[in-house]
Structure formats: structure tokens, C-alpha cells
Amino acid sequence: MYIRINLMVLLLLVISGVTANAQKDAAVKKANTSNDEKAEAGVLNEKVAEFLVKSADARFMDAQEGKLAVEKATLPALKKYGRWMMKDQAILLKEIKTLAAKRNITLPVAISNKKEKGREDLAEKDGSDFEKKFIKMMIIDHERDIKMFEDAIDFDDKEVSAFAKKYLPTIKAHLSKIEGIEKSIK
Image (cartoon, rainbow, N blue to C red):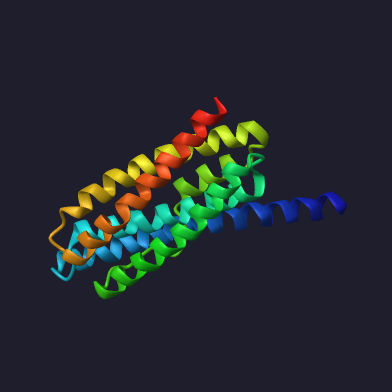
């Protein structure tokens, strides 16, 4: 009887995990599908929608990575960096949501499975292993974001272009700071 109950509890946990992952994937897929339909109908700019969806997903990820740094990092510079990330990502996400709403662009409501997997891998690390992985992920994330924001500056949508131009220096500053932290601990 005890084993049967434990197996049932385990099965429910597995099912709920699968359901949660499916919902996360569904949120990103739903946003992309909705935006694709609107683009086909000529209601929105597909490149702008793609940029805002990817940017929102990245903001979710970067904020969660920052939170992990605050909780798990042993280096004060990384804890401070984590707080900075959380603050700046919240500001960026708020503006992304405003831009998307004005354009009837659907954004995901949760982090994508791919990014969630990366966050989970990071969360499993401790000490210097955590810090090395965190730094590596931040550098990769910010290099990707710089490319996305540089591309968005050239969009025909003046407001989205201005947003990208306004925040590109912030993202570059994040990259520069994390690279400086990396150099200081080598």
C-alpha cells in the first residue's frame, strides 16, 4: 500500500512536470502562432513581433539568472551583478510589453522550455561551478541580445527602433561588466 501511494505521488509529480513544460512551450508556441496569423493578415510586422517575443523570453531568462546569482553566488560582485540584472530586465520587459500591446503582438507569459532547461542546469550548480556557468551564460546571452538589438535598430518601426537604440548601451554595459568580473577571477 505504501509503495503504491509513493508511486502514485511520483506519477503525479512527473505528469505535473510534463504539463508545466507543455504549458511553457505552449505559451511560446501560442504567441508565435498568433503573431504569424496576424502577420499573414497584414496586421503586424513579423520581424518586430519576432524581436519582441525573443526579447521577452530573454528578459524572463536573464531576470531568473540574476535571481540565482543573488541567491547562490559567493562573490559579492556577482551578487551585485545579479541584482542589477533583475532590475534592468524588469524595466526592459515592461517596455517590451508596452510595445507589444500597442502593436497587438502576443508575448509568451512564461520562459520557454529551452531557456528553462538552461536555468535549471544553472540552478543545479554551486560555488565556483555555479559562478563559472553563470558568467558563461551571461556572456552568451548578452552577445545574442546585442546582435538582436543592433538588428532591431534598423526596423521600419520607429518606436521599436528607438527602444533598441535606447537599451543597446545597457546590454553592452551588462556584457562589459560580466567580462570584467570574469577577468578579475581568473
